[in-house]
Length: 401
Ligand SMILES: C[S@@+](CC[C@H](N)C(=O)[O-])C[C@H]1O[C@@H](n2cnc3c(N)ncnc32)[C@H](O)[C@@H]1O
Image (spheres, rainbow, N blue to C red):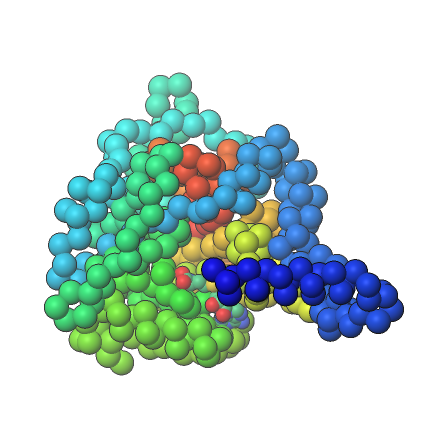
């Protein structure tokens, strides 16, 4: 007790002394001069307020609140783990959003003649016309082995950390559940060769591997430190037999140059590009793309994304399919990049691309995610307080030549 009151007394004295020290004699901390006027998170919010209020209109205030609130996770089930976590997750009130959907229901929608590149009918969705001339799109084919558990809408319970099984493999991987959508859209079939051009830290790679259908998987990420993280993730989730050179190749190349190394090769290519990572940019000042020192890098993102997507297109084989994805709401980084890639693939490489209609996929998962209604190309999951996933943008392209 006596010690406490002594400390309080000393603190009071120090405060009193500060009052008598003239401003000119106070030592200014170094930070006072070097600290930027606004932290990167504030700069990000200012930037989003300007761009997204015009892009999303009346939706922006609710999306803004969701982005500034705690995000929701999904638990991607690891089929290679011996732990029976499915039952445990179900007993906690979670459900696998991939299988828990009405697949029989047909989607009916008018074709929009204004959509320049949009086409219907492909390997993942079968087009039919009903008696009113509307397009009936049957449900897409999805891998039944990708499972991702989520808590119900409005339930913000957090998942417990995954536990290792007897051989050390973890039962699930926590990620934004909407990040599973690009992997589902990629529609991997048995015997496919796959390229994951920007793979680290590996959430989507893990989802793709759950299909157990891939013949050969090329994983690449230009960042050496992030590639090491990817390797650690794979070791925590996959049995050693899968981590062999016959099945898997991990590289740290600049993905924009991939087309120069390997062309017309892969059945499926995932191009999950670096972007403004909207949620991270609003939450973390560390490593923030809106920090002043990274302004050039941020402004160069659409160009880098375009080069990566084009490299992915060139690496795919004729008839092969490419999924482009980001975790930003930005129209320029999403639709803008895809439009330019379609144009440049034709002009510079003589490659004709078809945009695969993902509306059946969005319709199928409309009870789990909120999809933006007016995206010209691809689908966009927008954050919502009751289902705080995303933002995730995905667009699927098929090489016709
Ligand atoms: C959105 S993250 C990928 C996330 C990953 N697909 C996942 O699901 O965990 C984008 C990645 O692109 C990588 N990257 C940035 N520039 C690249 C380039 N020129 N070539 C290849 N990868 C690049 C970054 O290091 C980063 O890991």
